[in-house]
Amino acid sequence: MTKRTRPTYSPEFRLEVAQQVVDEQRSVRDVADAMGLGKSNVDKWAHQY
Image (cartoon, rainbow, N blue to C red; front, side, top):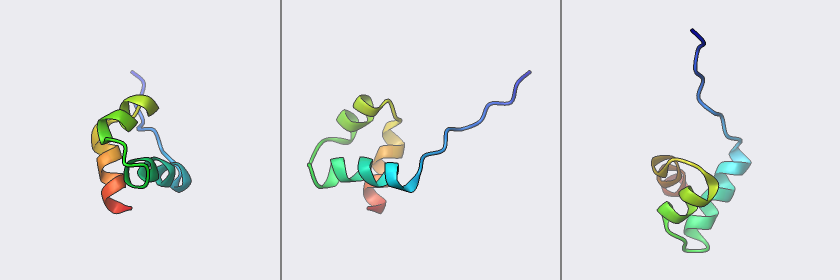
């Protein structure tokens, strides 16, 4: 059985995603779907930004 690992995202990538939500006023769901990310991750990063 192989051990599953979570993907790690660089701070620069997280910032880019958060800026799309906050600065470009795109929806969290739209950005998450476009980037292939989980909605909760995008929401958390945008809130932190």
